[in-house]
Figure (cartoon, rainbow, N blue to C red):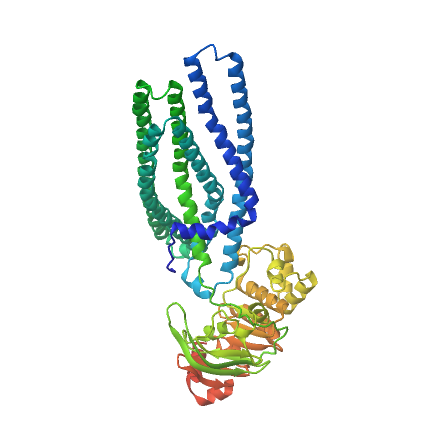
Length: 587
C-alpha cells in the first residue's frame, strides 16, 4: 500500500477554498441569509429586555399597542428568518453537492493519468472509497463550514457588543470562558481528526476485502474457504468497530467538555447577574437579556460542537482527496510533444535500462533492439525475464529508466500519449470486458463506431457467428467482466475491439495461453488475420503458436540472449531449443 501524506488543517483549507470560486455568488448570498437569520434571532432578547424594564419601571408606559407593534416586528423578522433559512437549506446544499461533483471529477481525471505503479501499490477498494464515500461528507462540509462559523462569529461579536453596552464587567466575566473552552476543545478535536482518518482508512480496507472476496468468489467456493474468508472479513470488521469506539470516546469527551463549560457560563450569569442585580448595577430586564443571549450563545456553541464531527469527516474526506490529487503523474506529455496521424511501426530500443520506480527492481539493462515495419516478432523466455515489461514500455505504461525507445525515428516521449496509444493495439491473456453489451465492448475500440463497422470488425475476428447465436445478439449483456461468456468468446470480442481500432502496432501478450485447444485454434486464426500488415510483438508460452514469426527473441534477465527464426534457433541448440524440446515431450 502506498504511504499516504498527512496534511495540516490550514493546508487542507488552503487547497479546498478554490473550489468555492465558481459559486462565490451563491456563497455570498448564503452568508447574507445567515446574517439575516442571526439578526432575527438576536432581536428577541432586546424586545424582552425592553418589555421587562418598561413593565417594572412604569406599567402605564407599556400599552397593548406597544406590545402589538413589537410582536408584529418579531413576526416580520421570523418570516424573513424562514425565507433566509429556506435559501440556505436549498441553494447552500446544492452548492455543496456541486463542489463534491467537481472534486470527484478532478479525482477521477487525475486517476486516469496515474501510471501502473500507482495501481500496483494501491487497493482499488481504497481508491473507490476516496472518490465516493469520502466525498459525500464534503457536500455538508462545503455548505455548513463557512455558514456555521460565520453565524458563530456574528452571534459572538453581536452578543458581546450588545451585552458590553449593558454591563461590560459582567460581559467580560461570561466571555472569558469562551477562549478557555475553545482551547480545551481544540486539543480533543485534533485527536478526533486522527481517529476519523483511521476510520476512513479502515473502511477502505474493508471495501478492498469485500471486493477481493466477491470477485474471487468462485475460487473461494472451489477451495471451500468460505470460513477463512469470513474470518478475514470479521477481523477487518472488528478492527473497524474498534476504531469507531475510539472515535466515540473522543466525541463523548468533546461533548462532555462543552456541556461543562455551558454550565459554567450559566453559573456566571446566575451568580454574577444575581449579585449585580442586588447591588443595582443592572436592571431586571438586563438580566433577562443576559440569560437569553447566553442561551443563544450556548445554542450556537452546541451547533458548532455538533458540526465538529461533520467538520472532521469533511476534513478527512478532503485529506484523502488530496492524497489522490498529489500522487505523482509519472507518465505525461512533454511540452513539445507532437501528434502523429500514422505510425509505420519501425521500433528501436536504444541502450534501454528499466527498473520499477517503487521497489527499484531492475528488469533489464542496456537492451538494444530494432523491429522493422510490418515485422512479426515473437518473444519467449523465463517468467520474470521482462517480456511483458518490454512490451509495456512501447505504449508508455512505464517509462524507461535509461535509454530511449523510438518509433519511426521519434522518441516516444516526444509523441503525445493519446496519439501514441491510439496507434497501438493490445490483446492480453486476461481479457477485460466492461459491464454492458457485446456491441458496447467492441465499439470501445472506436467511440462512435457505426453498427456496420462493429459487425465488420466482429466478422474479421471470427466472432460474428457466435454473437448472433447469443440471446440478444450484439445487444446481449455480457455481465461484470464478461462472466456470461466463455474465455474464447471474450478473447474474440477483445480482438474485434482491436480490429475496430485498426492500430499500426500490435502487442499480443500470451493471448491464447489460457484457452482450450478448440478456442485456441479459432482465436489464433483471428490473431493471424489481425496481424496482417502490422508490426506485431507476440509473447507466448506455447511455442507452436510462434513458429511462423519473422524473428524470435529469447529474453532473460541478461537481456536478449538469442534471436532468429524458429529453424535457426533450433539449429543453435541453445535456450530456445531446450524450451521447444521440453514442450514437445509434454505434448
